[in-house]
Length: 435
Image 1 (tube, one colour):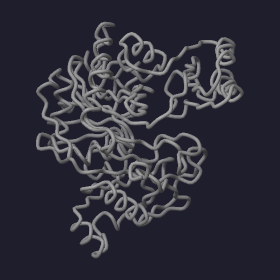
Image 2 (image 1 turned 90 degrees about the horizontal axis):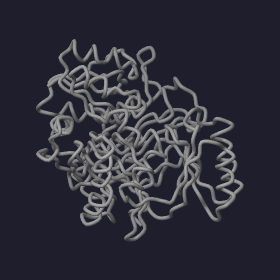
Image 3 (image 1 turned 30 degrees about the vertical axis):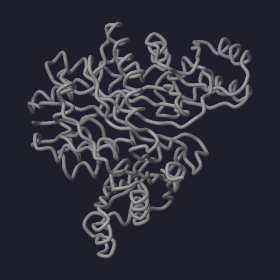
Image 4 (image 1 turned 45 degrees about the vertical axis):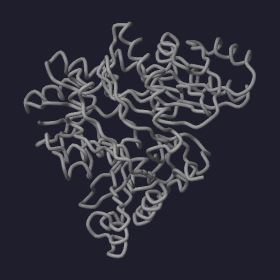
C-alpha cells in the first residue's frame, strides 16, 4: 500500500522507519519530513495543518492510508475532512480528539465513565479559579485546558504558587488560548506510566507500557519538556495491571465516547499515576507519544501499516499485534537552553559513527549482546550539506536489548558518540526501574 505520514519529529521518523520494514508498504510519503525521514520516504512540501492540500495530495497519489502524528493536526479536524473525501486515515475525529485538546472535556468523560482520576474543577474565569484554590489545602495541579506543547501543567505545593499558575495561564497568557480555561485538580503521588491502546471505536488492544521522563533535569527536577526519554516495558507493570487498565480505563472510555456520539478511533494514550494497586488517569492523549513512539516502534514485531489500517477500518479485534519481550530505551539529546530559548543551526557531529561506521569493537560487543541501536531525528535540518540542529529536542537515541540494564548502557554509549554545542541530556533514564 501507499502510506502518507503527517509530521516531522522523532515520532514520525520512528513511524516511517517501522513502515519502511512493512511487507505491505511499497511507497511512503511524509509531510513534511526531516533529514532522517527523507532517507526512507518521499518528502511532501505541504504544511501538516494544510488539511485541504494534504487531502488533495493523498487523492492524487492514490494513498491507501494516512497516519497523523501531531496532536495539533488532529485538532484541525483532518480526520473528518479525509473521511468526507473518502480517504482512509488513522486518528480520531476533531470531536473525539477533545480527549486531548480539552482537559476539562477529558475529565468530564472520565467522571461519566467512572474512570479513576483526580478530583477536579474547571474554570473559565480567573477569579473563580482563585476562590477555589484558596478554599483548598495541600498540593494541587493547575492545568491549561488546551494544547500547550506539554508545558501547560503546573504542580503547585502551596496556595501562592497555585494562584500564580492561574494568573500565568488566564491573565498573563503564557499558554495562549490554551489557558482560556483552567483545570485545578488534586495532586497525586506515585509512579507515572504511559499506557497505549489501539482503538477502532468499539474494540481496543494494548500496545505497550512506557515510562516517560518529562522534566529537563535528572531526578525529575526543573521545568517540564516534551519528554527527555522513555523506556519500555515497565518492570512493575505486568499483565494483571495491563488487564486492569483495559477493563477500568480504556473500555469504559470508549463506551462513554460512543454514548456521546463521538466514537474514538486511533491511538488512546492514557497517562497514569500508579501507587501500589491504585491507578488514576492523569490525562489522555490521542496519538502516538514522543519519545515513547521510538522505543515502541523498536519493540513492535508486527506489521504497523496493517495494524493501523485495521483500526481505521474498525477491525482491531482481528489485528495481529506483537511486541518484543525485549527492553527498549530512548534518550533525547536536546539543544542548550531547551525548554527555554535555544539556538538553531548548530553543526551535529558523530552521527555517522552510528549510521554505518560504528567502531568494530563496539559493533562486535553490541552483536554479542544482541543490542540494536537507532537514532531518530526530532529537530534537525540540512544547511549547505551539513546536518544541524533545528529544534529543542534534536535527536532521540534508542537502543533495544534483552534486558533493561543492557539497553540503558547501550543508549548512553551511543548518545556519547554524538556531539553539538550545548548538547545536553538526562543521565537517569530508567534508573528508577533499575533501583
